Length: 191
Image (cartoon, rainbow, N blue to C red; front, top):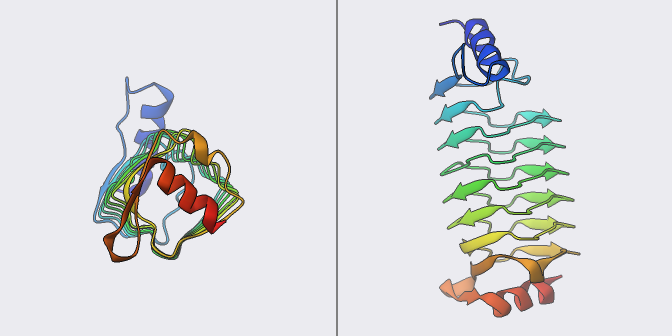
């Protein structure tokens, strides 16, 4: 099926709330050179797709599912990941500017050496993620659920609502695990 047919059917599927058309589904696709304008990234299904080094601006990823996708060195500006699944995906060295992760889910995703600037992690579920050496600059952690996430050598600048996290357990050097107020105090001390 040609990409334009997938796009047209997916748009119809979104516009009719699934009553007609067909949800876009991509498996092991190289997404370079394809027009990724909405709505193809909204409520789409992507498995093992290559999005490396792509620049996303003002993109709504609402309720999309990304499994084992690669976003290495991608840039995200003003993007909305509300209710998005990011399981097992690799965002190594990605940059996120003014992005929202409300109620997004991420299981064993890699955010190694990422930069998060003025982002909202409100309600973001991060489970067993790799966030080593990442920079968190003015990130809102209200109601975030962070479980067994490696934050070794992470840097925090003016984080907000860290005391309002739903849950927190982080892994540091030598597999030291900090939970609850100990983890919150460590983040506070880092900022």
